[in-house]
Amino acid sequence: MKRIRTLLVDDERLARRGLELRLATAPDVEIVGECENGREAIEKVAALDPDLMFLDIQMPGLSGFDVLARLPQDSMPIVVFVTAFDRYAIDAFEARALDYLLKPVEDARLEHALKRIRQHIDERAALQQRERMLGLLADMHGAGELDPESLLARLTAPASRFPEVIAIRTGRELVRLRSADIDWIDAAGDYMCIHTGTDTHVLRGTMKDLESTLDPAAFQRIHRSAIVNLKRVRKLRPHANGEYFLTLEGGQELKLSRTHRDKVELLLYGSERAPA
Picture 1 (cartoon, rainbow, N blue to C red):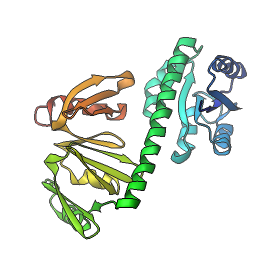
Picture 2: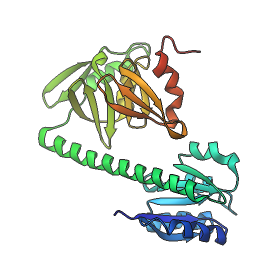
Picture 3: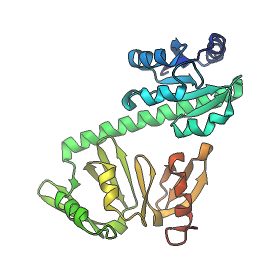
Picture 4: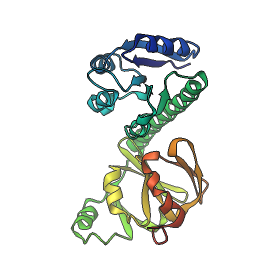
């Protein structure tokens, strides 16, 4: 069983102790440190590299939001805010917290949060494994890249024009993909996978470059690591905390993150019929 290395951050000792007692019933949670202010939290995140941090919002000196603003993104643990005030909930989720608990923390609500945490850790591990596999495939068979000449032509063209064909260069070969044939695109680290029917093209590059090449009337970012062809979406199923699951024509299921929930109307109606 993988241990979830956990840091407790709260200026109230009794609050930390209460959370510690409740977490003691979770065999996979290991508390590696406690902090009573934001400055200590920043230092211990750097020193301990925890997987998870339960973080109070209102603390003397640095608030919980201040702590997140000062942490490097590459060392950011999963964050669950714990506070006595529900007025911060929207700000907490906009700060990319995974969950939000109100004091006094209820056992059932904490168990629900732990379930989400475990799911998130499993998804992150799967993504890392996938990135390693894509790297291995790229080393064995090579990976393409967006053709630099095509990108340059796109940048110098009028903003309203988007290419019907995307050129991918692999060694001396140039593969031409029709944009309309793309079902969806996902990214894992330095690699992108363009899915077209039963074929997948592995590229080295960034989602930002590829997204700038595609017509936003036809393609939309639904996650920081996924772009979908709007015409391929067949079902939209709501999930927790503003997230959705999309089902594509080919049966693939993709997640629409809450940071992109403003795309729901586009996914339902398409760019031409979406309500103003």
